[in-house]
Length: 421
Image 1 (spheres, helix red, strand yellow):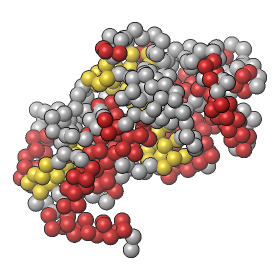
Image 2 (cartoon, rainbow, N blue to C red):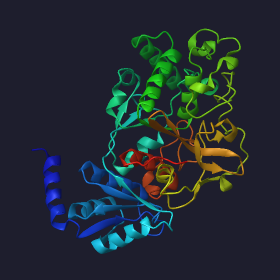
Image 3 (cartoon, rainbow, N blue to C red):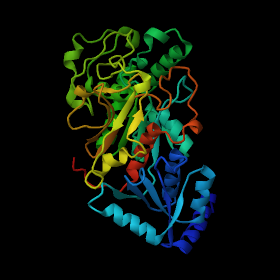
Image 4 (tube, rainbow, N blue to C red):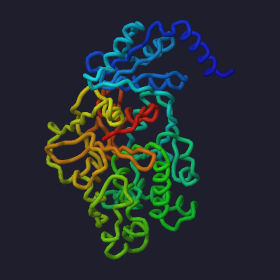
């Protein structure tokens, strides 16, 4: 008998003795929760033990209602997560209040811990990924995959996929001007070219397109995809440039197609439209989608606001925007935010900087699946640069910006209702 099975049996015995007598409420408001990020980990940990959890949307910052058991209480104490033990009568009172048509709240049942994949290259990189950091901090398990696994259709083994800060266009992140002589850039380029050849492709751009198409099919078939920073726009650009060479000679050894801008097919993208590609290899930018060089907002006033949705009628965007504040600190990245006029009309803008006319956090449906794009690199490091030290999340346990990532992690666990928006 494995240790996990033994713990599950002990847990089940504890739970049976207390069934329906009391519940654990994990509050997620600003006043009473000491570690919002690890609270998601407790919820995931409970789902792993095949117990259902209620996500109380818009109730005290999006609180969680768990069955009461000593083992759960002990895990909360170990991880430093604030919780309250409430009676069955109190839980019923809370749920009846949430069910009232007069309040914008809803109780969504979380049923199964989603299996998580992070698309990321092997080996250490000179920068960090916010998603892997927060998953590790929250103690939510994940597996890493890369091109070979994707092309072998191993995405079908997972419920949720995060795209690392990848360049799906084959232009090596547009780092050419600043880092083309750096040892790490030269080595990364060699490794990417070797991997492409191993997988049967003449060019990295062709191999990355094949990966992007597999990811597209994964979402269309019912998968959940989350991407940040340059993985957002470079993914859509790669899809739209299928069959078109947009890479200059220093990237793929030959010239780009003449007039390639007019050959871009916006009907193939997930989120973006009408963008102009950045042709110069010396410009650290993929296209006009990104707002990094257009925005004129000082750090002190750089915030984005979360949209409010009807919890009962639109539970999906409501889940994805749960937070203890409606105003979240902005942060930069290669792709910092998205130009509003280049977002398709069927895509929801869930977070925006209205004064600057930019979208920070967007969500959409593709086929049977869902995608969320989040601009910027690190919610707690305003201008994270190559080689900077990683963020220590012990210093930011209540980060609203990181909470948005973890909302997406739990999203596939929910028993969903049809979105009405």
